[in-house]
Length: 161
Image (tube, rainbow, N blue to C red):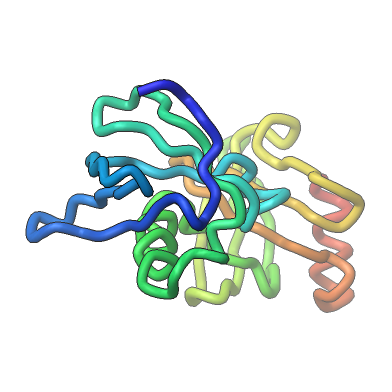
């Protein structure tokens, strides 16, 4: 299948009994697919990358939120599995242990404690206020707007980053 851009009116999604996601096109063709966000941090509701189950790129889906509600729910379930990024609400402390920074934070998913090995590599400023932090295990945490956090958290971020 040649790569193309799909619009919401051209496709539908369903899940089979084995929890595999399937895409049906307006031509009636149905294929098992995998989906990923094209721009997960900067435009999460933008384009969706569609590939077959072997990982071969098939195309892009634009404006997925315009699909029927059942398809939107299936896509969001699938995307949530790959893009689970807790939001940091408060930083309790950041301290160094054995040349590694240990962060203790409060997130929208509860308290977390994680290690950041390299400030330059693992703390990414996407804008003046939007930050993504990757821990030593590859998990990501996000601060969408640091200026909406308490002053103590903002100070810790300024010192750390």
